[in-house]
Figure 1 (cartoon, rainbow, N blue to C red):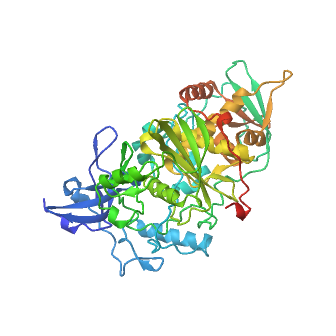
Figure 2: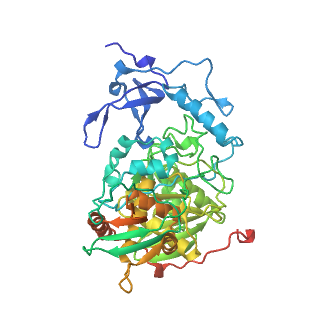
Figure 3: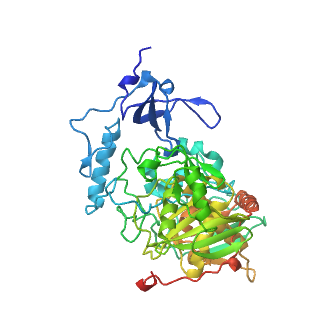
Length: 541
């Protein structure tokens, strides 16, 4: 066979050999993002189409299927982005999508500002995507994550995730299914000639009653006005008040490729998933060393050892506002502790991909979760939030570091964020769009929290207990739109005898109980010592 490797350029597409989760060979279609020559051979950086970017990698020519090589379409000039030279030649099917995106942008955001892909100003902080590990999922909740994501969070469809990319990470959660499972509604016979209607509104009255089976219950909802999902109205461009939503306009060839090979943080070595704007000279190092207490990055192990003799920190800077057992939470002001906040953002960006870059940590608070041992407080994960959010966001970015994923810490971070909202007397929601793992984790948390309330309702005077959507929202601090979308996601809502009802089948109840038995880590409100501040007064900044 003739050697076509010399013909391969950036933008070409062809099948590439890789191992799937079962360690079997597969040949998914991939796009060549970069080509580099090393002594004796060439290497190709590939992005697997419809797979998550965290799977991108450098491959050798023997893994490429040259017979099915697709060349990019030729253009008269190099494509331009925001008035700057384009990052790559166009590849098949990209032109159509690009033109659609441009029409959508001109219609929805005519005044969007330009975002330079590589600002000259020194990078001080990085905005982060909302992503957590899907820890302790509900094992038998019905519904389709795909359908829910499409109807409730439509912007997620623009992300490079597909069913195949989710299958790569199937052990992380059992909420992802390939089809919608129907619930057995054996409690209420279907009414002939009556069509089911969708539930809307936020002030519906909910009635819960026990049927013949003590483990099953049905909730009645009175119809109300249609409500908008919380993801509707997402700003098409980042807000200057601290929003971290990415408009993807800066997504060039540099930011599409991982630039850090390996990070050593304490006793863990981490393999980054995505690009992070560390200094250029650090990208060629085989290992980047980080102090696990101040998160300062260093070039060599000797530099790290010398730094540790001078670093006095044994915990994150800021106030410890929660401690139970070995778990602690520290509140860090992005203005008072800029260096730490910026280093935290740079580290987190290695594992987050959905948001754009910012250079000012002043508008944010960071809540870092740690595990304590004899050597100090070791970072497990964190979330950030705006000091002032006009859209009731209680989380801007959330991350559990890979060594601690799938151990329940992700859901603990989510629970803590809502516990702070309860103290503040507000309802909150995470900033959209959520990443793939973030969506699944929030879905799991919302499902467990709402089912816990519905199952604990007691009947009074022999009548069926009643509860409103507003009351559920006030009890949990979960925004009303998220409550409604979760009920729809669980496929609990039916229309029966002129009323909206929620039917809790035995499968739902048993699945919830099994999930709660696995959820050992919970936030104890008695251990929280937190006083919210009024950040509208600039003097408190």
